[in-house]
Image 1 (tube, rainbow, N blue to C red):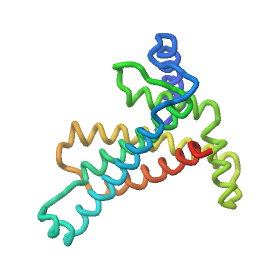
Image 2 (image 1 turned 30 degrees about the vertical axis):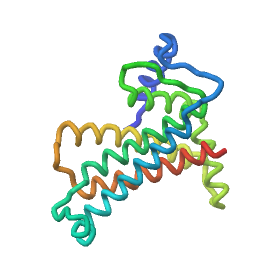
Image 3 (image 1 turned 60 degrees about the vertical axis):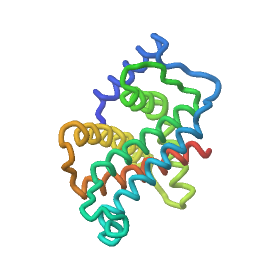
Image 4 (image 1 turned 90 degrees about the vertical axis):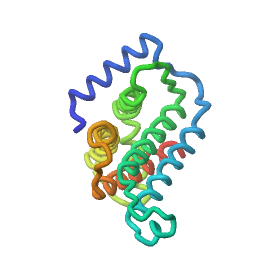
Length: 194
């Protein structure tokens, strides 16, 4: 869960990284398309793995009768979100230059540059207005918080499944990952497209 304590910790880490020069801001980002392509490829991989894992005919056609790719669905979904977050940061000229966990720093920078500044809430409000929905400001803030929580939860789950559970992954966890990644990527792509 994304609570005030985590937000404060993220803010402090980003400020420390800015001071050390491990996180810098340039005029423009050169790698937006690179991260967008990786995000799309990761999500497509997750969709394909999920489809093969849940479809006996596809398993037969590919010759993998006992295939179970749910662990990799979770990983690919997380990476699609990670790369989308990197694309958004890159679009603002935010560069991560450290050997420290780039995943944690990406999450922290997303909070620092987009959540604390209200940019995610503004984009969520515009998205909902364009769709013709009437939404209260508190709802849009909750949606922004949910997006950041989805990213945090997927980063945590990817780590747990990859390092703690080995090859045992449940289909419903993979399905949840697919839904989170889709929602997260769509919301961030709207910000990038503006």
